[in-house]
Image (cartoon, rainbow, N blue to C red; front, side, top):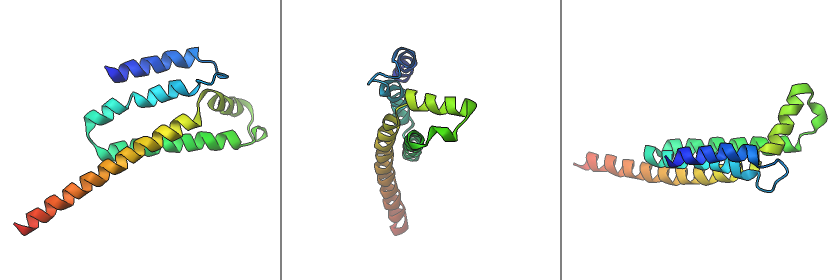
Length: 125
């Protein structure tokens, strides 16, 4: 329910927040935050890590895209580049992706330590 509410709010804001607004990061952030309750429910640390790394990669891609010269693109590809740059904040994807990836890395480390302890207990008994 919370995920659905965040996603719907994200979609509504995507059409309401102009590309020149300082709040252009908000729709993408709400979209990504909508996945957090599902990641908590799934309890799969590797999935959380993968989700975070994927979003950080998207943020990095968007950041690189902002620094590429527009004269290298033509036609529809140029329109797509301009849309991605103006409507999607690379920092929202990068920061939230890295934050979720750190959460996934910590959870994965904890899971691995528990697994090793369990395996060591089995060997000694």
